[in-house]
Image (cartoon, rainbow, N blue to C red; front, side, top):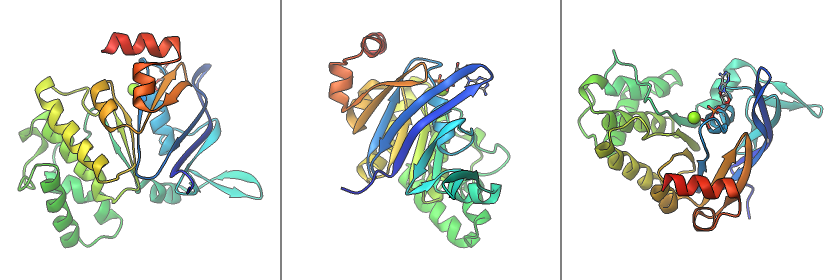
Length: 253
Ligand code: ADP
Ligand code: MG
């Protein structure tokens, strides 16, 4: 049994006096999908943002592929890495947000190749890869479109292609379908489902419980900054041990 690709240990984060994460432990094995559930304000976004060091933890750490994110172990102590080193670590951690966050004044292709080109991939090669990725997310030949010419669901699939362009070891999704009209949700979930079948390691915040049941290897329920329940989807969704999980699941279903 190899070590988990992602190891979160004792992750703690407060905003002012307000604790958002109170000692979160979490593993994600390579090639597996973990779905994070929990009520609004339970710390799901903060957890994802701490995994790629957009937020710095107050205590605890995140390790991806054997490397502590944002820190280096020096003489038994954690020292913050340089912003350049942190950027290099982040390159391999894709993030897809609820609001797509595409650059509106750049074409689809420009959005996708920006990261790889900045990291030194030749432009031509990056463009070729972008075309392949667009095909993979069902948007073949949309290279020269602008985000405003696309539906929300198409924009979100471009955002996924942009994350894939960095050849990530891990992709974080923060409610990727919450901002979409209901009829556009399915196409985005289908792309994520394909990635799961392909063995992409993913940590996904979603309220789509049917989807969670289908793709998750593990479902983790967060409440008030703590993991209160974690296990295979049928266990957590069908027979939750925790009272809060039970009421959440029955409210969402
Ligand atoms: P979730 O994604 O589960 O809805 P969040 O991680 O966004 O929860 O938030 C967890 C808690 O931390 C909430 O109480 C929220 O108000 C607070 N919080 C999150 N981000 C910030 C911030 N940048 N400044 C202050 N408080 C924040
Ligand atoms: Mg959130």
